Amino acid sequence: MLEGSILSRPVYDVLEIRPGRLHLMVADAEGAEAILDLAASAASDFFARAHVIYIPKRAGDKFVAKLEQLAPAQLYVGPSYEAALPRLRRVLAGAHMGLQVYLAGTEGLVGQAMFEATEAGIPHSAIQKEHRGSTARRVQCVHCKGITEDVTHDPFQCAHCGLHLFVRDHYSRRIAAFQGVRVDAEDPGNIPESVERFR
Amino acid sequence: MTVIFKEETFHDDFTFRNSPEAVKRFPFPFPEDSYMYSVNLEPHKSYRPGSVYERTFDVDEHYVSEMRDRARVLAEDPLRCQSLPHMTLAGWDLLELIMTSKAEEYPELFELHRDGAKWHWINRPLGIEQKFTFLDETTLPCGPMEYITRQTQGDFAVLDQRDDNLWMDAGMVTTQADWSLDFDIGMNFFEWHAPVPKAHEMGIFQRALKFLLNVQQGSPARRLNWTMTVNPLLDTSPENYHKWGVMKKDLTLENMGQMMHLRVELQTFFRLPRSNALVFPIRCYLIKLDELVTVPKWARRFHRVIRDLPTELATYKGFVTNRPKIVEWLSRYDDGAPTSPGIWPD
Image (cartoon, rainbow over all chains, first blue to last red):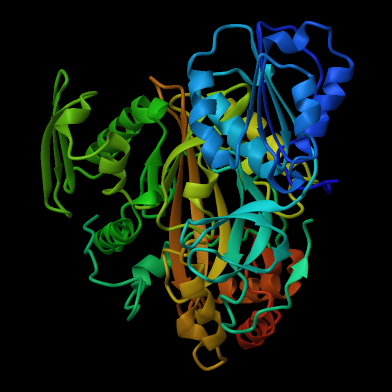
């Protein structure tokens, strides 16, 4: 579960069925469970109007067969968010009134897909987001601007510039990332022990 | 008033100094001997001739050097100036506000000639002359917000107003107290203030937002904010924190007077006419402790404020480690005598 936090941090809810002409679902890893839970209360023809984009990550094959059983009109299982992105953008670009967007999984996935949806002009009221699974963070290094995915430890080493960064709670929706700041800026070399804060 | 512009630097050799006249007009931010957050907003009206409150956009002896420092920072990091696509009109509003104010209030330094949309701008201190068409971006060397804020001291946050909130959708930010425009762009008022301790719980931001949403055209508001900075760095950005943070270690009782600076932000708020955006200039004034203690009232009061500041605030403002040293140094200038109310020297 996510801890309570500061006001720049997004608030997540629990996905619920909403009336719509097309239901676009984007999920990663345990986010699949949110879609499966949603299916429990869905009408029999609901998934005939659904397009599911799923990135299993560490969940592997665990949920894929169950998602197939839902028989969505379109099901895409991809190797990474980056790989799925052109498809997501294409779907959003072709969206009509009545599109409902359901985002579920890690904060990194939900945040990035949220940004794509709002950039495409989808109103906030048509987007739901639910956090499931890992609390690992997507963190932007404030110094070099490089983004490190799935950060579990604090402090951690920036994957781009190599500085040791502490992870702030301050969150940018546009970047869909938390902010990382050099931990030993005032006392170079004095790096506290790295602790697993996000699982 | 004739301003003599100084040649000085805000990096490397740090030759920045205040003249005695500049010290006298420094916006000392403490009206009493202690400090806590408050919504200390007041109308931005001209008063006290010679003070930083006299003109709409104060131009002082540091103008030319500050603009050179801004150009240096922007060359290193162009992300310090950004404007989301819907904010261009607000940029023109801001350009108009600054050009008309400066030309009217500093006729010896700035001129603006307008013939319909054909404008002719002369900035004497920076040696700039520009003919352009108002609202036509192709006639300026860069966007209107960037163009005019490269010629105006202080950072600028341009805030879009919608959904009963303010959104930081454009800005020029090179003289900031440790916040990142690149990270915060697109955030609303509560989001970009999220890291500030205590003030949310005190209801400060809710009240401030209510006030700011209602700022009317022609009735700007202002407030002061402050922190402390080791070395006269205008650019204390998080982007460069790994370069300036280490300087805090060099502070000693011997170099305190020259190295430690009180950093005061004169924040003003103007409603813009076409875009209904709110522009939030954040003007940074620096003063060395050696300069500050030449005013006995300020020396006494500043000692008491720093000594008694809640730890959380000293931590947030980034000087908690150096505080014992700062207090020890300042205590030499505090004889315990009472101080008069208000911020001005006796």
